[in-house]
Length: 277
Image 1 (cartoon, helix red, strand yellow):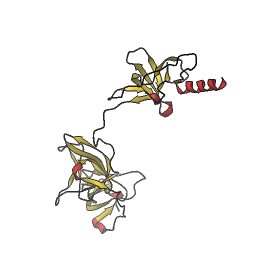
Image 2 (cartoon, one colour):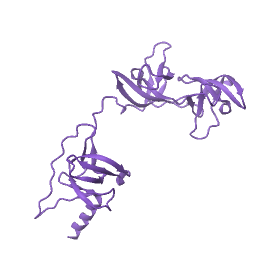
Image 3 (cartoon, helix red, strand yellow):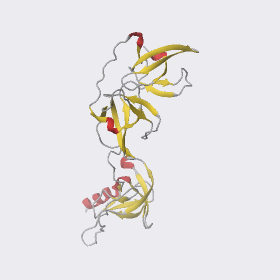
Image 4 (cartoon, one colour):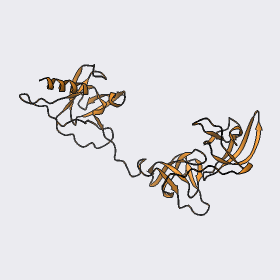
């Protein structure tokens, strides 16, 4: 008897109602129908014959107002907390039961993931298949006419942030790994699986080349369209990035240098000269 009481208390804390055996009829729910699409949520994560408590508030301290069996479809509302402490407001499709349940017992359906839809793939891509002096455009959106952020050359290694199909064309979202810090979309047909880029210290280049230095940990250096803090930010450079020096000038009390990025992603703009060595 004591063991049963202990099991019942533990089940209550978990939000599960145990089936009763022996003289009483066990509460049985049929297995849920397959979850077929977005917006469909069912009760799961429990045995087929089990039920979970529905409470008047988002905690086990609130009174039980009902119970739901495995496979019951519900509409979800407000969710509070996270992890094992996540509680969600639910209502059955017939509206007869409404309250809060532990979020871990909610199984949410979703549309089938189309091929290459921002999931899977290698960690890194290498640009391949460009002809002659062609460069691969990095665009702000996965559309051919979208604004161009930067360009990539053959052999450039970038981080894979996922791919998707748009109008029959495969686009991949990437982030640069050398030079400037840029994130955008490129045509997937020019990407091949690659290992991580080999990080090498920038070679010396005299006054023709400069290296970004003196940034605080985690900071990046803005590349602007004009030699002023009012200029639009068109790119960002990380510590150690090597750039070509196109000349410097003094504007007010600040020294600004016009630079061009190296390493495959080509952007020309102005940076604060105090961070160049």
